[in-house]
Structures are given as structure tokens and as C-alpha cells.
Length: 69
Image (tube, rainbow, N blue to C red; front, side, top):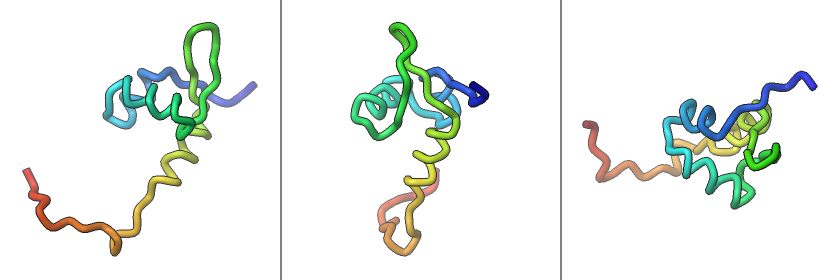
């Protein structure tokens, strides 16, 4: 086993979202994970694949009404 396994907290920190968001993605099946005891681990490659699938086409995004802070 050479692939890095990340905790839900580590994934959440990288994506700058809450840990609950990561658990929701895992439970919905959107983000593959393995269960180790009572904990979930996400393979680094699975996280990369998930992110690759989330890329949006800029032409399809409606940014009207969004303001910079």
C-alpha cells in the first residue's frame, strides 16, 4: 500500500469546507472512501478524481448577482 490515506478532517482542511460536508459527500457516494474501524479515510487519488469531476465550464456559469467581497 503506497497511496496516501487522508482523514475527513484533512480533506476538509484542504478543500476549506467543514468536516460534515466531507461526511455528506462520503455518505452520498460522491467522494469514495474506505472505512478503517469507525473512521473514514479518503485515498489521495480519489480526492483528485472527485475534484477533476467538479470542474465547471466558465461559459455555463451565471455570475450575475455575485459580488466580490
